[in-house]
Length: 187
Image 1 (tube, rainbow, N blue to C red):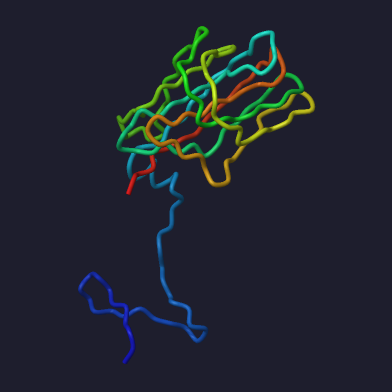
Image 2 (tube, one colour):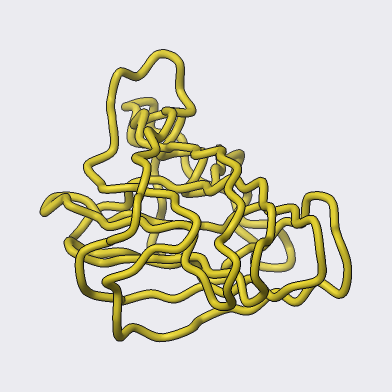
């Protein structure tokens, strides 16, 4: 007799295998985002509008993970713009956000959870004081555009102290933006 998979509920039922050597199961599957939100209460949304300053290449969004216990996973953002521009994303920038940044309070996506995210989040018309990092995404708009979803296919993982920023390449761009995030765990 070969290896057998038995129920862990004490009813001694064995797993079945079909004629094509497929294990027959009835399983519950959930995305990591759904699990983080539904089961852990650790998913947040930030919706904001911001018009950038009257010069090019302005940082209008900044987030820094402050948690030593949880990675912050950014799965993407949605954005609309009022003119042709490029919106680009940088990670790993250092420095203290300057200018006149306004704090954004992320909203938990689970109304039964009272958890808040341990992060610094700002919007501004042109944050200063940041340097380094690297560009990971650039979305080009050839004209004004309604909401466009930008998904980071492999997600962006911010460890403690990790940063993500959003930039507008053209001056005086009015944006409406939503950023989605959840806590991953460290193993």
